[in-house]
Image (tube, rainbow, N blue to C red; front, side, top):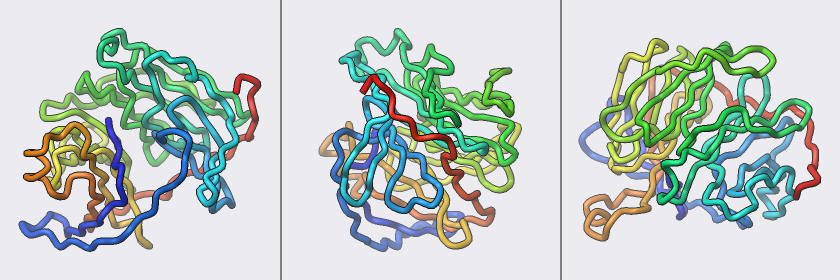
Length: 281
């Protein structure tokens, strides 16, 4: 699904959200980059460089200068696919999924979920995907979550210590909107953004819906915890594909919203593997 393309405004709500918005506008800055970024992996002891999943592959990206050193450019051919959602697991491996951006061939489900392991090797872990989204991991690192958005389904896997996924199963079936980006809080509950539904849904570890937050934009794209105590839930949203009339009705589309939540999030793991420059870039 899309990502915001302009410096965001931040609107803060307590939990549950009140009827009236209290906007707190803060200016962002545009990052010079060679391609769209689907996701990033933070690095230990690094403040300015990240591993970024660009449209065509992974690169070591300097946030200050905009310089990129390509690591694995595995989708460089014009094949209708690009990298999308990704996240680092509790063991320090970076997982990134692709999506079939060309709607004419999306039904072929030719996208995959890839893993950057501790040795710096980058390989597809499973395929048959249309739009990879919602990669997240339980607090103990033993369960992985993944969404294939057009299927309106969130899946769970067992995740072994060596990074092997097994026992794929349906975690939640989505009936309103499409599951997009997700994250897990300290109680092991999954927060899932619902593209086209204007909501963020909190699921219990067994998949039950515990809470639904309504956001003032129909296309929330991802969620992340922040703040000193990790009790601020940030929700990004997109303006893509909205008509002029819809944008008039949704003046906050494309903004970032902040909610005060009771249960804190977890610190984002960092990629702890090798940085290896492959020969195919």
